[in-house]
Image (cartoon, rainbow, N blue to C red; front, side):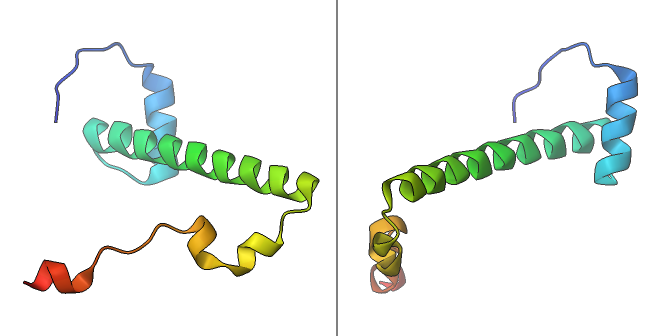
Length: 79
């Protein structure tokens, strides 16, 4: 992990710690960053779903290979 020296709003930090149930500044900031990234991924997924809805492209959702990443070859990892 990289160390950064930044100014943090103490009130916002305290509010975030309460929301996330974290005890340390480090845990609060890291949890908030992870959550922000998750929110971005959900927004992007919703945007893709909206585009499909507007185009009427729901049939592709029946084919899992069309929208899900292919799993790694489990046999190769065991070798």
